[in-house]
Image (cartoon, rainbow, N blue to C red):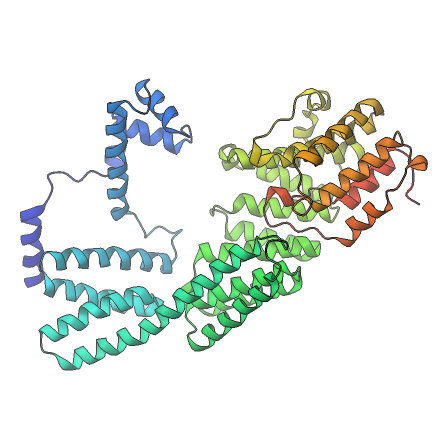
Length: 505
């Protein structure tokens, strides 16, 4: 009872008249600007302050009414975070515990600032129990310090020593986790650097692997082990050792199976993406299809759903399982979330659709009956419409102009195909970097040689070195548009030779 009295005194002195949050009741008030703002955001109708100010007040973002609404709206959203429903079926036990511990820790700090030490200590003791079960090192250290201080004030030396030992033990683990986080972050940063900018990249990443292994052996906490899995998987990915990427991800998933209370969907989702992408590079369609279908069920409501479809689609195309590729595209497109994907994702999936139509247009396999959506694809319109993308997406200009070349060659419009190749030559000079866009650059040069011969392979000049470079280099796709290769360029070259009725000798 004394704890309730202590809390009541604080609430009586400092309570607010009204707690402003977004709950079911408040959201039913249709005439509220707050709710109008909220609904526009949830529908994805607002992308900027300019759009929001115009939609709500027909004004600009500098308008006082809009600025005041935005400030109060943000405060109300933040207040609502303290009342999230973590007991929903989609939340794992780990996520519920993580949220509850951090929410309760905030309450401990508020109680302490209002001199309610006994109540704060009682709540801290409850937090420690949960944090120990899920190994939240940061929470254990912070709460143990509070309990250690409280034990000193109570002159309880036994409890003081108990919490002091707990604090020291998890301080060491927390420090190791912080170092492990840094190793993982530096692995990601360095893995994305080109070889010219980071000539010692492999040696550096190997050192991160070695150190992360040492940390996991001395402090096998969930945080350190997850970081170790991701460091090793990324290292193998950089080395293009996709068999080891796959096996590392298998080990990580096995660890979660053996420790179900530590299940975290966000972490598992990253592991799943790495594993599936490894199978794309290995061109293991049988295993990849099984894995993709399983992940689409496991992560059905996770934000990675579209990325899973993307990797599944690329797997099918790269393995020349075109009927499956068309089916995967249709499934993704029919998903109700597809209409709300980002502009960048729309650009990517539009490119997928174009290349699937290229396959339907050129491939004569009777099994590939045109899906309804592709029957609406207008080649004439695609060839006539300008292809314009923002600076960070310009690689799609090159990708789609290559598709135009294929359509034009199929229709024997050689003059227009020659003009598109000349355009690609200009893009290659202005937009493509030799190291960053190595494979697509070699393919464009191949097209240039064929265009110079008026698309007569018998008259083609020096070109074999470009074919060899494509065969000797490998596809390296890590979800960056610059690395995207929808149909492998070696196969695309074979398709072009088939279209022009010449065999590569």
